[in-house]
Length: 305
Image (cartoon, rainbow, N blue to C red; front, side, top):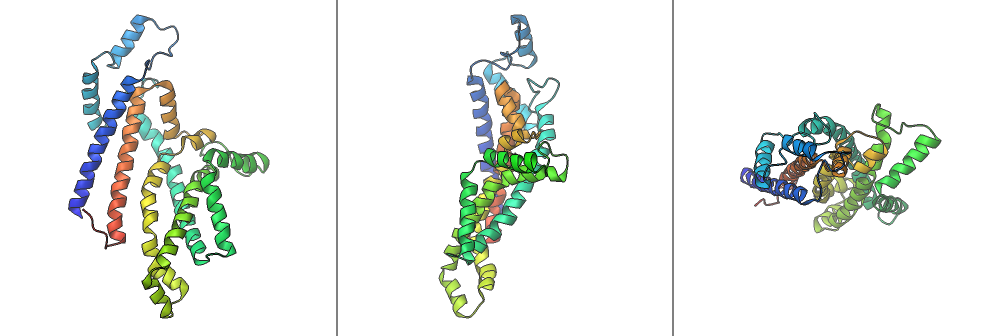
């Protein structure tokens, strides 16, 4: 287990280095620069700005300096938000996205797994058909449509819920629902198909032949094996929802990291783009390593290499 964990961490660090390198040189290859949109800027002022942020140095020198600083957690200053460091912006904005995404993850798991179990247990019945219909809608409908419907129904018409920000517990309901709708539907379908496959195994038929009740066989024998595909999906789902959806954050005016990332791309804030990309890549890699190790804990039969 320890050897496998060390190997996965080493591979993760290599992946992070590749992501950082690709991001840096892709930013260098983009036409124009971060100060091109400045109004009536003179050549002298442009040169002064580039010298201030080290953009007048050779590319390889910039690359070396950036990697060395990044290893110390310093992603440099934002080129557009003057006076603010990228690390400070991430530290300020990520907790907002993390609260929103973390709540959506909990909702997706708490609702999606029971729905999948219920559908599998009632295969072919009205409950199964209703859950499949819900899951299909959840997968097909994009988050911006869900957000718009929620705002129109519960915000504009019924005036039951706030539509802007995250100032109160009630303000979490609509953005969390919009974020969790797709993963909840996907988990329900995944859990249903996996559980049906497990329930068709020989040891499950033997348990039923011995007179073990349906619920007992479902929760004691089938669920532990059937949940492995869901654990596989939890890794990327957790990473994507923790950083928040920029669409949902934009619609509900939530000052999260996803919104900042999109603004950085629009404004060509190279430092912000690279810093956020490295941070998110490190988060995804860390979550995937943890999920891989959880496989062994959930199912000891799995061999880690």
